[in-house]
Image (cartoon, rainbow, N blue to C red):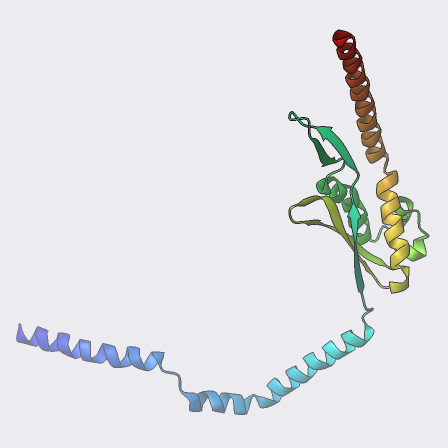
Length: 201
C-alpha cells in the first residue's frame, strides 16, 4: 500500500515540471531561429515591398464623386385634411434601377451600359461603378456615388445617370399612373365640392 502511494507521489512530481516546461517560451532559441532565417525574412519583405510599389505605379487611379438626387414627390391628403409629401419612387426602387448597370460594369459588358446611359462605349470603359446609398431617416433623397478613371467626365456621367432614371420606361409608366390617379382624385373632389355647393344653396 505504501509502495503504491510512493509511486503516485513520484508520478505527480514528474507530471508537473514537464507541463510547466512545455508552456515556457525560450527567447534565446527564438532569437537563434530568427538569426538563422534572417535572409529569408529580409528577402520576403523586400519582395512584398517591391510588388506593392510596382502595383502603385501601374494601377490606374480611381476617382470617386457623389451627388444627391431629389426624388419626385406626390402630395396626399391625410384623414385630418393635411397634405403629406410621399416620394413617387422610393430609394429602394432607385437602387433596383441602378443595380443592373453596376452588374454590367463589373462583368465588363460595356455595350449594354452604353445603351442604358446613352454614352459612347469608350467613355463607359472609364466608369468603374455606380452605387446608390440611402440617407438615414430621409426617403426623399438618395446619394449616388460614381467611381471612374477619368475625373473630367464625372459631370457627364452624373447627367446621364439622372437622365436614365428620368427616362426609365418602368419609372415613366409608374409616374403616368400616379398622374392619372391624381387627376381622377381631383375630378371626384371637384364633383363632391359642386354637390356640397348645391346642397348649401
